[in-house]
Length: 188
Image (cartoon, rainbow, N blue to C red):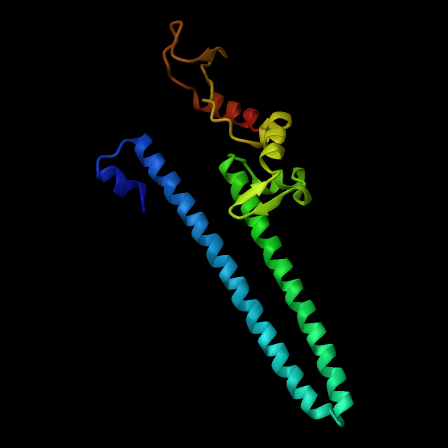
């Protein structure tokens, strides 16, 4: 979906922004599902390969029934541990992806810059919801608001250095040099 196509359909910029935002959420949700399924597939493939190799080794090395029973018990325990480790890894990956998605939705300028401020141990996944994340995001937005896009309009400056918002007799033109300096100062 492209903005140009929506523009051709006669939608306003606000409507286009709304459509693109909703479309982005759908894409993010689908990407999360694809990543989860890909990880699950890869994990199952590696488990299957590992178990096949274990059976081959078992056939080669087994000499008596007691040896065989002992190896089977050990393999069952190893396989159960590997399955639990894989499930934990998948749950952690899903949780991290959802945290990053929530930070993007909170308009974090750089998700990787905000992540160190999040205590992921206090965040839990409850179905499709994350518990314990909203309060942390609000606290970071309050203490370190520069990490988030506030959506405030940038002040425009004329050559004399006064703020130019189109009022008080200013002409509304912006000097490109002063504008670039203002943009750099804002990012500090």
